Image (cartoon, rainbow, N blue to C red; front, top):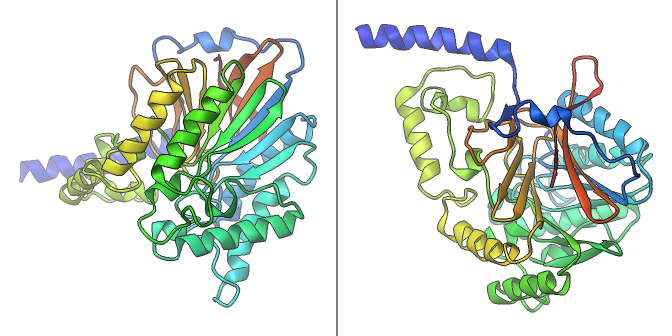
Length: 383
């Protein structure tokens, strides 16, 4: 009886504590407080990348608060800039064929994101995620192609959705004379159903894809290289297999942050399942193969930036000379577990900005919308 009373008491106290506090930034010992003393260079950036992932939620109220801040930032940017959507552009399962019902409803998810760039002088790019591929189910390839076709027609631009034709890539996008982006379709690697192969894609096999990635990294040695994809290679969030103690007791919060319903046994089962190799998590064998191959190449080229979504948070993790940046908090939010390797984490909505200055000096910033509706810097660091 005593055990259950303690459990009930905790179930009442914890929701009150966490729901009132709201999301808080996480810093490690080397960045806590010190980042606020840093200032961006006075020179104008040679190139700026605005990164937002997992922005395909149908809840337009949540979209508006975050999107409004980003739209304001974009309006002040010059032509030497890019807005990149890092996948999961339509929840829950991509864009249905026109013959299917509710097509217009899901088109609206994309329209809201496209509208952000209305007054943007730079370039806009969309990258696919697992939800765009029918949430990893049988119609994934078809729905990914539907989304690509719709975005290109809506924006009247055939160079806006990468990699093209639902291929794995890698696709090289020169941004400036000394800056290159390499875009990967990581969902292609993980997708267990029909997907394009070498009959459609120039690098439509595992080995061809990995070999070409290595070739592009070698080709661009000496340049600033940003690798962009949906899936993280490093993460202190749920897709990295990291869970706080509260996940064992309140597992429904992994799907809705407001559901403080105590389910201690089911919670532990859920965490165990996620740690045992779910295909969309880094604990999965095939996912880990991709991680190991990509990281082994990137680590040969110090100061490479790997930019991703997937986890619904903001994170910065430097590892072995590579800078791992997660910006997947477009319309959703999920937990981040503190660790010494995590230089910054934020379990709330926001976006990332990467500024590249003369001499290849690079700065990373994370933003959220404050209570007054203005952009608030959460963290900055020289990379």
